[in-house]
Image (cartoon, rainbow, N blue to C red; front, side):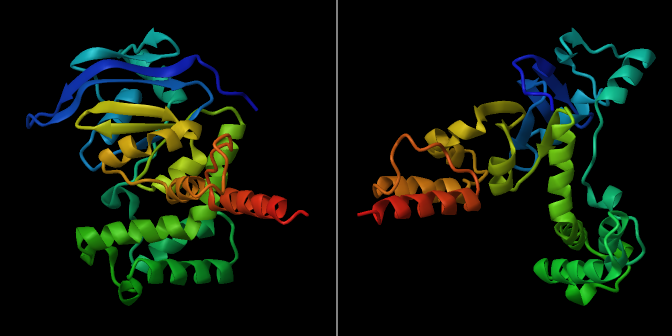
Length: 271
């Protein structure tokens, strides 16, 4: 397993980009992605997350500023882009790109089936996912007859049906030495999974923190409107009550929090 280093594998430097309709995609965005890291990109819709990803892969080209790969400016010639895209891959999550089966239940089943899960497990996961997103009544409807909002729900159901496996895939890729960047609205998962949390806001990277240091910046994080990890809130509240000492490392998942509480309880019960 390769370890994270201070050597950026990808970097954007003061990148600006406008779309043909004049809307701002990036507005002087700068961000360095460290080799071997796990980075979670957070921000409201329209903050610039997708535009940034399209620059990292060379699909979009900066109007000003620079994109660097392995320390060198990206070569936008045919061979240069072929080299970049052979090393930097993108996976999109857009409902009209992601949904491809005829009916809702079939589409949600696709991912779990291709992971090799047995039919009974797939069936149970699909029904649970449909229930979770309120789409049970639409399970047998053609995907093309759904509204945009309903399509988004089906996408979420597909992710729910594969959630554990997706987390395992990301962990495996990272363990094999791959640098992984995700864009997500799930702050709890981002805090648990990532080494670095980067906040996009109106076309710039407005803040970037090591995930382990996030409890010190909860007030700033809340100001960006991306939510606060629930486990970090609970940890902060318990520390304020004196249950946890100030030197306790940040706990980043509910299981870690429960373990920490159990250890404190065990110490407190000793004669």
